[in-house]
Length: 539
Image (cartoon, rainbow, N blue to C red; front, side):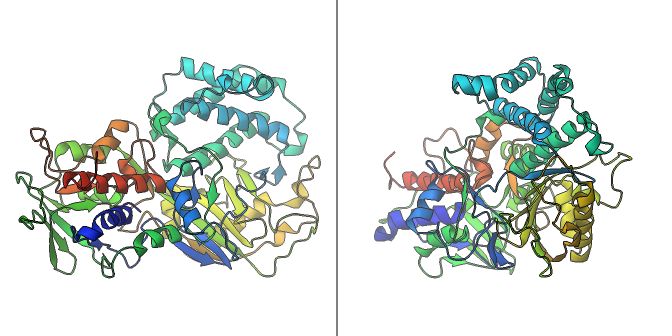
């Protein structure tokens, strides 16, 4: 996204002047990077980026509208938007009453509002204050005021402790005989864990204790609904690339080394004097080389982390300390998706049910609890949800983050199917359903659910990415994201310092990191930096 956006901007602004000789070198066999639209089980799926995070002001939404990508005859991932409220089931097959689930959900959302700097108590109506926001936001505010937390994870747990100490859980105590050995506190902690695990996939922080609390409020969201792209996220990429002359994008050109000259003062070229000697030399895997006046590096933060290791040699000379330090301190996590095709023998038993398969939120016992189902694999226990791609899809989707996401990459399909099937058998034991809840009818034969095939993403071990997206880790800050965006060499004595190596990508945007639109903005930023350098753009 970042590289093609920059190339698109540079070409469209200077094509008539024949000013730049542009080349986009891609190490892989396809364009798109962490955007990769595919098909599975008759549905269009996203192996990478999925959502337009807020349509108000989003450049991705604007492009999707312009190229008519928001409508399709073929089913696509999350085409229904965020699916209906999921059914929350505790391990052992106990459907949880909303009276247990809703208070913890409201508490968690209020805590995240405070962590993200949203003071909703001042922005909602009096009715909402009294009915929804007042109590839970007061608890969150209390946790915020007394908090010495430096991580999002520690703040969230302080909030849960504040909720328990307020006595609210005891006041809402009810007869839990229908929930086996689950106590109310264990259920509440499990529900809270569901939301923590969802947050891990949002941020890519494998452990929320590694997510910096102070930086959380700098992250910005666009207003409006979050939607997926009917014709696939790849349609955005293809649109950006379509304006480039044939041959501009070169696939299978993996860069092994970038040589640059920190001391060289490279003067801007112009039409009259032609090119100056080109200070940057790219070495490719096949032994070929390319000389350039400027290189915009748009590899992932994961690849940059690998590049600063002493034995890498990707940059020669090595990146300066200030740049390497920022790369080292920022977080870059692994998030993977698992797509599961239901066996053709599975049929809906309840014709009044709206969907083919229910959206499930799974509340697990602690990994060390004696009450846990010991055959459920550890990598399933921090998976929060198991949902159909859309209401009538026979493809199920679960998200994984951190250690379990990496573990998933090394598992054989047969092992994954066995692990998922074992989990489903524990959660969909219809004899153990709570008789007070009718959201799932007992006539469903969920014990007959079979998974016929699976498809997993493997972002963590792919050498072209080595992870999914960035976050502000403990010990880093938004300043490091700004440092990521600084070009090299850095010479503060010059009014117009040379621009040999420029950096773009989601990990270089202070307020929209981890998103495709952040990558898009960064590509525009670096293209504009070069256009200003050559006086082709008014500042």
